[in-house]
Image 1 (cartoon, helix red, strand yellow):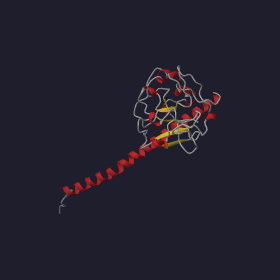
Image 2: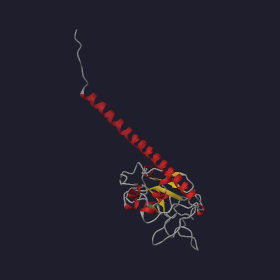
Image 3: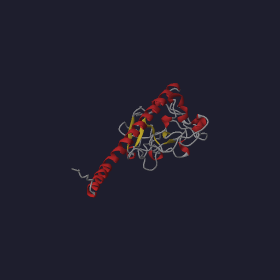
Image 4: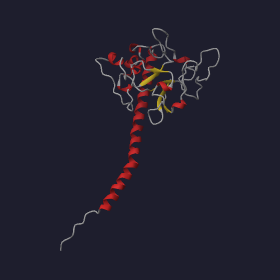
Length: 231
């Protein structure tokens, strides 16, 4: 007696396809978020290593922060290379632009994208027109409140080895976001933290200490805020 072979009906196939589509719609965002969480963790590890490299630099230079100038040859990211011994550490996995290529590290350091991370220019800026010595760590009144490095965009010439900013919007565009709705920051005391842009205060001129009267707004570090101000 022959057995009749019966395939799936069209309705059954459509039901299976619909179930697969629903599962995909549920799981794909989960996978995407998990992947971005992994990238954020790598980014935070990079910032931690950069921070440790800066600390080692400061041990050799009388506790002074790295100098950050208006040319690549005085760029902080090039100055700390003997301590971090890696250019890859300067690349955030969530930043899509490629690292520059060149015959040697000095050539690459002068090109956009050498570092995806900026440096707080209030710590050690100097230039041919406004020469100044970098500050010592002891002047930071609240190392746990003062930004050291953070997520940048890596797309412009400013992202060569001297990439710097004194406010969050100078990092990753107007929104200050890269990882979900925030960005990663390292601080003078060595810790690294993810923050939303509205939780980081600008250190632009007129908002930090140093004058005869308190600045307005007063963005000086207190120990309970996050700011680009050093004192």
